[in-house]
Image (tube, rainbow, N blue to C red; front, side, top):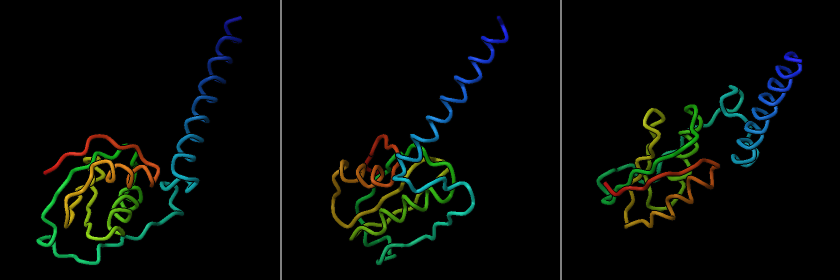
Length: 125
């Protein structure tokens, strides 16, 4: 009897873990597991690399990053936008975003969500 209960618990744990993996895969738009080593993301900086040209600064909390490829994806998404420069700290879980014009916090959140990651607070620096 107790062996059956243990088996049910083990199967349940494996099932839940599989669901979480599938959910994360879907959340990243089917981009796969960036931490597997086969998906190497190259950094793309902004067109204008002079930080003094970007008077507005924001910190965007990013949830779900697990490796440098994750942080590069977020930075690249911001840096591909006009008049935007970003650096992402994996350790802090924060995207440090600078813009030439004031930015709408919801637009900054959409950039992060568009890459398949969760987003927390957006604060002006």
